[in-house]
Length: 515
Ligand code: KIV
Ligand code: ZN
View 1 (cartoon, protein in one colour):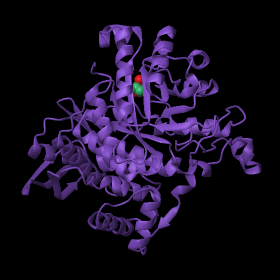
View 2 (cartoon, protein in one colour):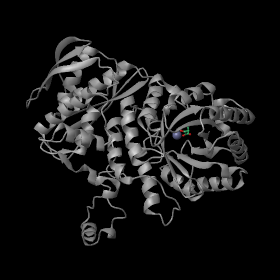
View 3 (cartoon, helix red, strand yellow):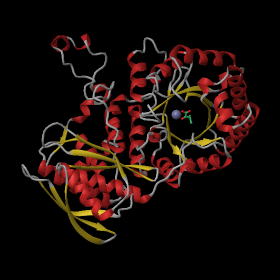
View 4 (cartoon, protein in one colour):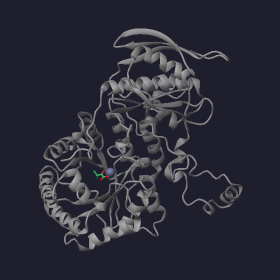
């Protein structure tokens, strides 16, 4: 590989999923992974195989579906984790095991309760074991940016000798500062005797808002892999955002001596897909993918852009995929055209039934709404409950009424395991009334953590996309629903969340459990 090639390692499906409430089903992960592949992401970290049977299955499904990107699973430096990771990535054309152990004094003493020598010994043993199962092994020094230089040198040299070909030094707690973090890499790359046998990698968290700056500083100092996520999703304040890193090195190629394989035109559609699946909205002023990122409000700017675009625009909206939200289909479009457009958006259907369901949804929407945009298609499939979510609760009838001076009322029929039950409730609004009616029947005991409505496109005929986050017994789930009727979308989202809770997905967290 050329010395100037920057490897883009996307961890939306692993670290991104560690954002509380951002859990994704297997089918949703496959859909995102296919978009990442289309964007030409080099490495997709598809999950943490030991975390749960669901995570394991998701990694396998991604490994089966994606052929062009390397598929990676995270594993603590523990035998069981590494075996599970190897099994999960087995179907991949190109697979990677990413194993890690904490190396900072504070983590070793209080979390691992291990001496540095024990940590080093375990790291070497586990990298060797991983190498026996997979040719491509990455090793991460967790809390690496707060680790001592001498120990960093010792452990890096030892794991490279043991077979690791990528060395990742994460800024796990988002404490790093660009000059210091960059200098750390320079010093290590210059002084670890076998540093030339590995690619150094950065993985930054955004607790101080410095994740992208730290990642870029690392690149300036010799790092050739950046770990990042779509929309900057990730644990706590998130990870470095893929779109910002990629567009920074591309737009400022005069400063950054690297190239990536990324096709940026897929950035905006992928950002939208991730946002609609996870229920994490993108702030309007977010760089690259925010709704206002290319909007010029001030008269002076507008005038300048009209006269000569480069006066105020450093990159074009089309380059990153903003033109992709063009009008594509209408009421008279046939099944083949709809299927083809879904496929262009990275959405494939596992069965004829799934395609039929999406096509029926499309026709219903086209009857209500004249113009169908790409966002509508994406919202349509994110609203269809993923095929791998068992459906316990379904709503077959809903009536919601509001009248000036009267309390809003909702009555609905729920089918639970094949048994229909009807009830009614009033509330502080139509959605509140509908949710009270659902809870009268289900009595779920869950707590509503988030209720979010957004319009998928412009205009009052837009599809409304609703996200509902519920928590019960430490399990947090996100349900989503779409419809041109907000109350219907809200009920769909609530039932989707209840069905996910029912599936009881409980996961281990990679950094919360000691080894
Ligand atoms: O932030 C971190 O340290 C991580 C490692 C597991 C790579 O996510
Ligand atoms: Zn992380």
